[in-house]
Amino acid sequence: MSGTKDESDVEASNNLSNEKIIDDVVESCKKLNVENQSDNCDSKEANEHDDVDEDAIDEIRLKELDNASSREELQERKELGIKIKEEGNTLFKNGEYESAIKKYSQALNTCPLEFVEERAVLYANRAAAKLKNGLNKEAIDDCSKALELNPNYVKAYIRRAKLYEECDKLDEALEDYKKILEFDPGYSEAIAATMRLPEEINKRNEKLKTEMLSSLKELGNKLLKPFGLSTDNFQLQQDPNSGGYSINFTQNKK
View 1: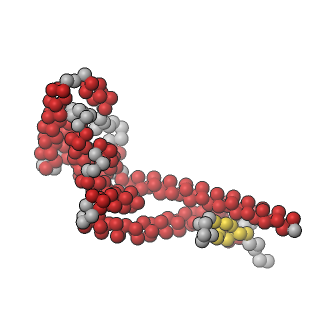
View 2: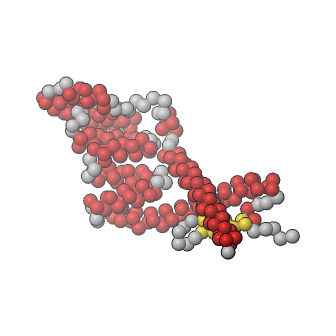
View 3: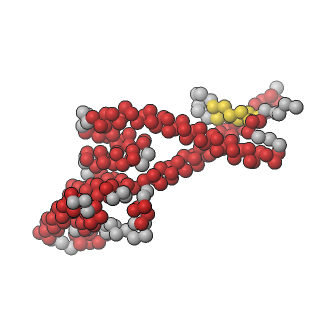
């Protein structure tokens, strides 16, 4: 009786160990997939901007400047920032997106930090210019900054949702479209997306799972070959209740 219990304990321990191995591999593959998704957001233009970030906003300097400014000076800088933004808008309309980006950055480095709604618009406008210039990842970052400043900025959610979808970040896109519907339940594009994306996400996950298992099998065969074994000697079974995996060994038939 004791022997049976020991064998059962060993089997349970092996199953837990195997589940952990598989879970670790799955997590690694997921991380790899996230990195690949990030690559989808990059472009030649983005890579060219990696060395020097000309669009960086120095909020530390801005804060120091704000603290040293009077109310009148703060208002003047706000108005100047709006004027520079309008210059950027003109450049954007003329298709001069690189110059528009620089103008919006200049405006962000001018407008005081306390004017959060104005700064949110500047980030959203710069995101639009970066999108036109092929800088998808940076455009997403600017949309996120705009939403950090103004969580009710629907236009920024719309822009970011579309960017996420273009970058194959479907889960994030779905969340943004759901958020849009909280503000505007009748927004047709968001309604269509919330109906379409869940199926696309499931298809992607199934494809990812197939690729992960294929990679796992290939790796397993390389490791087992010196022992005269292959992954055919092991059966991978998933528990429908827990979602965990167990591996059962089967001896080669002579």
